[in-house]
Length: 430
Image (cartoon, rainbow, N blue to C red):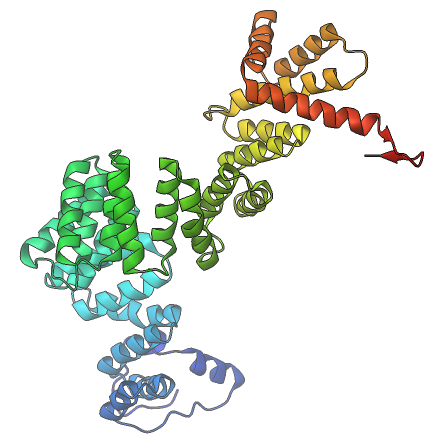
């Protein structure tokens, strides 16, 4: 091993090996590191030359310069090399676990790598070491909310806000405090905090978005829609505001009004399952069955095991006259979620409709055979299938003029397909 002019720092063997060094060592080639000073490396970083800064800091760090090691980790994080940054930082934090800069940088690196179970303790330690680190408090509260640790999130948000009140340019903790209160079921307080946030920062997309969400849960739909509109105005390119606005309009019965924000939401975020599902429902309600089917098929691709989407698509297939496919989808939806609201009712209705249509389609209807088939179909799906239940189902069909009209229309279509009308030329016309 080559003799160094300075003592070898304990971290050098682990912390300072970067991709460049590893590849060169494996190849047996010498590692060329530019001779530099710390100030020159800082200047390179300040000028945006991150690759150059990385090489310079690496060279200094190889000689045991801890300050350069921390700077190297910072540059690696800025370049998105979070795993390498973590390898540099882990031994540094182990050597001095109470040094806030090291702890904070390692938290950032692990955070980017999705190691939430490791990140939360590090951000908590950072906040103990540097109580004025508002950004660390924000991230810790976010992590707690994401983990549904709402009491912990409330404690962090409220404690930090007591020392550092929200400002017009930063209401993040106020919104997180509101979210924590909502998570604990304290919606009145959540609404109050969200209102404070938007009063302080009227252009806060996040503030308006969560205010709308809380109001919607409270049943104040008009006020929620107004809040979602403000969220969209604050950030027209954020799909969350658009999706929530469209969904709330749909809930209020304004399917036409819901179409535009939902279509824009899926344009911006093509993988937004909930937006595609809501768009499909809006299109059904406005009579665009082809568009509805396309939206719901896309949603089912994104979430093949979604009972809600499958049942919505079943309704579309029913409206399109594809009774067997509709029943298959309803069966599938109930198999995914046996207790799902509306699934059993949809199965029962589709079973009856399918058999009634078949019965009306044939030239010699056999009502007894139809009832038997209905009974068998219902029994196979573990639905009530005694004579009284079947009569009740048939009565519902007769009592629903829209459904009865639809059945007759399907039966006529079936008859035309089975017995085409002769054309004047002697052929057949469908």
